[in-house]
Image (cartoon, rainbow, N blue to C red; front, side, top):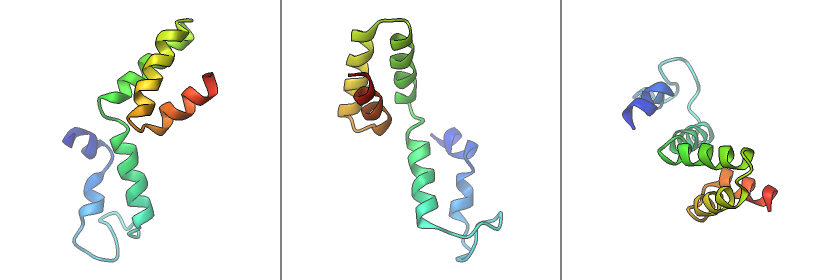
Length: 87
């Protein structure tokens, strides 16, 4: 997880100066939440989303939909949207 956070510059969000991050970006709760969502979506399940997509492209629709369904049940909006478009 630390590697993912470093790759997205998470340290910017932890700067002790109240008005800006180290790189001069204004602090923003909206931006912080967007950032956190992006990092969270790149965990182990990101590979599962890619696998579901590849299965769909190969024509293995049933297996793809099952995997998308499992991810959608776990709350991943990308899987929910993908499942909705394919059903």
